[in-house]
Image 1: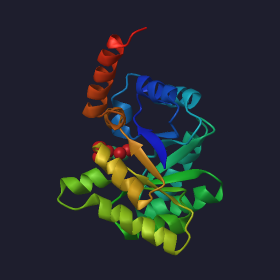
Image 2: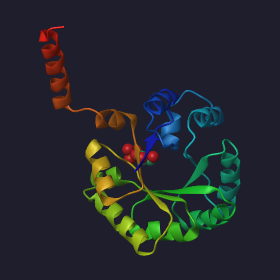
Image 3: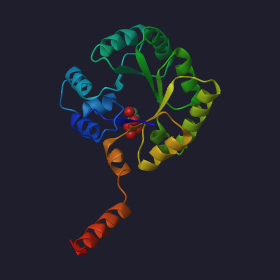
Image 4: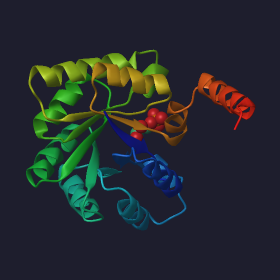
Length: 214
Ligand code: G3P
């Protein structure tokens, strides 16, 4: 399973890159808005740290505008995946852009039918937002299960990015289902490594090591 970091914060990106387990980054307008840096400079700076895909979102509404914006975004680094919200205009744009070899991450996926259409249009990635489904009393992970099964049924190459992850169990469940990628906020990435019994165990070993004759 690939791990993407769901952030536009350079310190967080540099930190997780130093762990040696970072496969890519996803941003969105809300995440970019939190950073005190001009948008293009920020994306270029992320591109200097991350060699895997960096998702950057298009905000245009019509297919020709989305295509134009996406082509510009794709120039910011060699590894940009343009993020396009699922919609009819978005589908038209995905078809054009994927035909040009530009990676598209179709975002705001809340149903399997949306994922099927994005894949048919040639998207490299689809991003089901599981936490936001959980928030409205729907089981987000069931959507991931449906999409993964459908893509396996038809040997679809489009990769599933499990997005809107809120806690470590989301990551584990996504891995059990066989999703290709989890995009994880820094706070959850940090929790993935921790366990209270590991801390207790380390304390005990250190104490006992003090009693060893040296
Ligand atoms: O990158 C998009 C997605 O992960 C957003 O998550 O927590 O705003 O639903 P959230």
